[in-house]
Length: 101
Image (cartoon, rainbow, N blue to C red):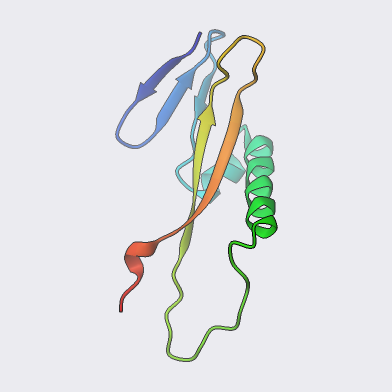
């Protein structure tokens, strides 16, 4: 069994072994945390999925146009049973609020 503790900045997951897991709030945190290997695998999986689904394509930036930034979001998904392992999910999302017409 796992306990989920929330505060306004981070989610923390306490396992039955008392090990604390944190969901990174930035790319920098993800690659520097103790679980960086799992987060890197999750990010690679997300990039492969985006490429496979042809979600976007790289193009040259048109003159006088702003680029919309993106951000990584991280989530630890707990297994629904004792046999199912914990999953690390990473999603690359556009910061649409920066877009102006």
